Length: 218
Ligand code: DX5
Ligand code: ZN
Image (tube, rainbow, N blue to C red; front, side, top):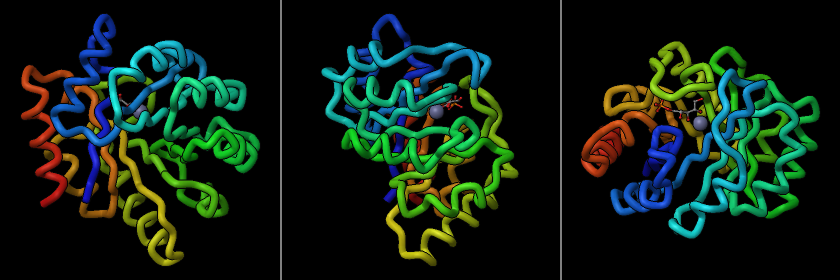
């Protein structure tokens, strides 16, 4: 079974509560929260206060993707604001194992994110400490970018390692996901799919979400 995580980065920020309710009713499984600081990535989105304000509008797990420098300084704030998952970029963590432990100490599920160029080898030694690996299929910073196809073999590589070691880890894909691009990713073993513009950019969000889900389940 695959899961869809709409990214509110592509939603109307003036009515986030309604935007989240709409995708929950449409069949979403998680809400993806893209946090950008203007340093790790060249864009600024929003922080924990905004996330806390949408929390009462949904029963879905909040999947927090931190695209920020010094994530350790903000983990407690996001945990208290209602995060269910917090993922940090391996490229932003000098002491990755410590950061993952910090996330779990607040009762939040930890995950690691890899940029398109970053190898699976960089996280082999923390696979026992995480619930989720998020593989970027665009360079982080903006919604609406083109899917980078060369990441697909990395999904298969990671999926093989997870199965071989008998681990219970979801592989999440983020960037340029549509009803077309989801297909090779699902075949390669990914289980959770972020979609921003392909859902919130469409008039009929329910039809858009269901089309992506059906394409991924085939
Ligand atoms: C990119 C973000 C993504 C983005 C996806 O930096 O991490 O989650 O919102 O947007 P789409 O689906 O439009 O590529
Ligand atoms: Zn994201």
